[in-house]
Image 1 (cartoon, one colour):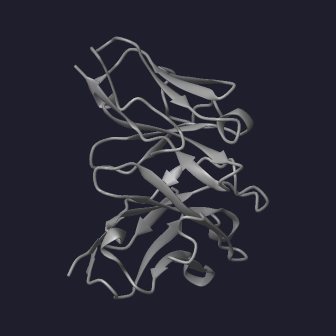
Image 2 (cartoon, chains in turn cyan, brown):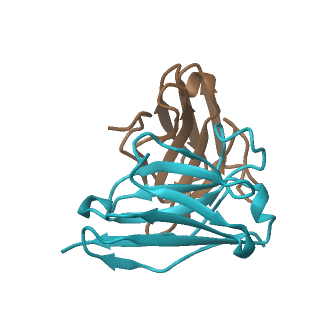
Image 3 (tube, rainbow over the protein chains, first blue to last red):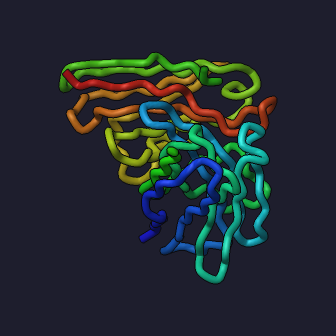
Length: 124
Length: 110
């Protein structure tokens, strides 16, 4: 069974750093795009970026470029989303989701399996 | 303000048919694939329709979708209470160079 298991909820202060994780199982982790999506409470979905774990190729939304960093550790089938300096406006639930297997096609992807989400709260 | 425009709400009685529209531009819907997601309250989104009109395994044929020019639509027939939640359309935008989502449509089964 294909699954994406995300790390637990986090409460942080502005200016702190944070890394959240997304562990894949039931498929070949290195061969499928993983995307990250933000959802501010009560709001819609926003695309952050996408990573191909096999070669750590990444594409960022211009809105999030420089604000977050995506990475992956193939040895433990885990993708990461990292902040160096959190802001209150980063408060949201963050989802990872599984895309297609073609390394050339990071666009036009449907995300057919989603993690349960990680709630990040940034407050002083 | 979302790049793809959806009505904020829709409703119907059990057994009825509802449609949800998604309006975009030539930068996204017209020249790229459209996908639809369902997000029940408090849960993660789930893929409902991919590549304009295809259903993943397990999605009942009560759900159908189409695309024409810069618009897409999702139809749900035989409404059931479990269909409640938020529905999002999504596509790639060639100008913005990112995946874009509609603002979401909240479906209520009366």
